[in-house]
Amino acid sequence: MADIKFYSRPAVPLEMHKVKIVQKLTLLPSEERLKRMENAGFNTFLLHNGDIFMDMLTDSGVNAMSDNMQSAMLRADDAYAGSETFYRMNDKLTELFGIKHLLPAHQGRACEHIIAQHFVKPGNCVIMNYHFTTSKAHVTRLGGHVEELVKDEGLVTKSTLPFKGNIDLDKVRACIAKEGADNIAYMRLEAGTNLIGGQPISYENMKAATDIAREHGILTVLDASLLQDNLYFIKLREESMKDKSIREITRMIADLFDIIYFSARKFGFGRGGGILVREEAMFHELEDYITMFEGFLTYGGMSVKEMEAMIVGFEETMDMDIISQGPIFIDHCVRALDSLGVPMVTPGGGLGAHINAREFVSHIPSEEYPAGSLVAALYLCGGIRGMERGTLSEERNPDGSEHIASVEMVRLAFPRRVFTLSQTEYVIDRVKWLYDHRHLIGGLRFVHEPKTLRFFTGKLEPVSDWPRKLIDAYIADFGEEC
Image (cartoon, rainbow, N blue to C red; front, side):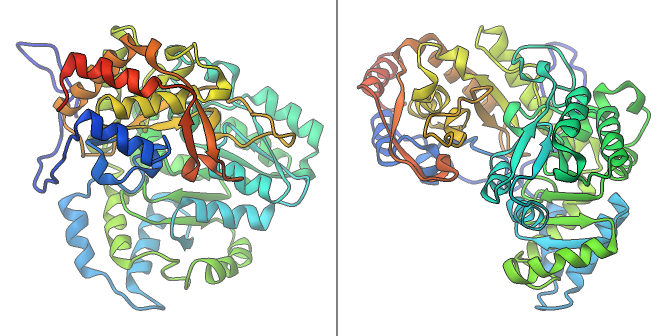
C-alpha cells in the first residue's frame, strides 16, 4: 500500500513506481508566457505544449504507461476486421464487468454520441447525478434535457462528506413522477463526478438509484471513465466495502447497469473507449453506429497498439497500489493549499486538486468567467496549465444570457505516474503566491465564441490590463527568468 509510514518526518505521498523514461520540460520566462497567453486568446486549451512547464489540464490520454503496457503494444494484431487484439480486449472486459458485448469507440464522447443518438428523442429527459460537458451537449443537441439530481450537499465546496457525487433519491422519484418514466431516455450515473471536483459516488447510492430506475423500467447507464478513482474511494471510505477486493467491487457495480461506457483515456491509461451492452438485442441495435461513425466492429477507430496497452491497463486498475497514486497526490496538494488558506474543494477527489475560483477571485463577476481568469493567471505565474470548470464551460441559455455554473472551479489535474512530489510542491507554492496577489486578477470577455463547447476553441481577452500588472508583481518577487 502507498500509505507507508515515515520514521523521522511527517509522511508524504510515495511514488509506487520508478521512472525509466523522461521528457524534458521547459519553463519559459514570464514575459514570454504573457505573449503565449495572448496568442492563445487567454484559453489554456489553445496553448502549445511547448509553452507549458507543468501540464495539469487533464488526465485524459496523458497518463504514463507502465512497462507492461508498452511491451504489450508489440503484440498488436493490426487486421482491419477480426483483430485478435479486439477479442483479447473483449475477454478482459467481460472478465472484469461480466458483460460480454463490447462496442469499441475512439474515446468517451464517441460513446456518449452513440448512446444519445439512439435513445434520446426531442423532449426526452436524461437523469444524471451531475453532467459532464459533452454528455450534456449530446443530449441537448438532440432536443432532450438533462436533470442534474446530485444531493445539495454535493455542491458545497468545503466539507468532509465522503461521497459528494451521490444522487438524491427523493429528487429521482420526484423527477420520474413529473416527467413520466416513458419520457426518461435513461439514467446516467457518473462515477465520479468530474465537474464538481471528481467527487465519488458510493456503491450503496448507485444500487439504490438503479433499483428505482429498474422499478420504473428506466434504462441505467454508467459512465465509468473515472471508475478507477471511484473504486479507490469506495474501498477506502465505504464501510461495507472495506473487506471487498477492487475486482469484487468492480463486478458489484457492473451488475447494477444495463450499459457501461468509458473513456479509456482515463480508465485503462490508453487512448480509446468502449460501450458494454448487457442485452444482445440492444447490442445489435447499437452496432450500426460503430460502423457508420467509428470504424469496423473490431477496432472502432482505435489503434490496436493502444488497445493492447489498455488490456494491461484494465488489469492494472484492479491493483490498489496503482489506482491510489492519483488520489494520494491530489489529497496532499489539497490539504497543503487548504492549510495555507487557499479555498479548495474538499475533501480531495479524483482527477485533480480543485480550487474554488468563486471564492478565490470573489471580486470577478460570474459573467466575466472567474475560473477562466484564474486558470489564465496561473499559467502566467508559473507556466502551469490547469482547466476552467465553471461558467465558461457551460452553454448559454436560449435567450443568450449566461448560464451561471453551480460551482466555479479550476482543476489541476494529476495525470497518473507523471509528476513528482517536488513538482507538486512547486504547484502549491505558485498557487499560494497567486492567492496572496489575487486582487490583481481581472475578468475576461469573448472575442470569438463558438456555439457549442465554447471552452475548447473560444478566444477571450482581458477586460483591463490586469495581466500586465500581475506579471510585473511576479517579476518583482521572482525575477524575469522565472
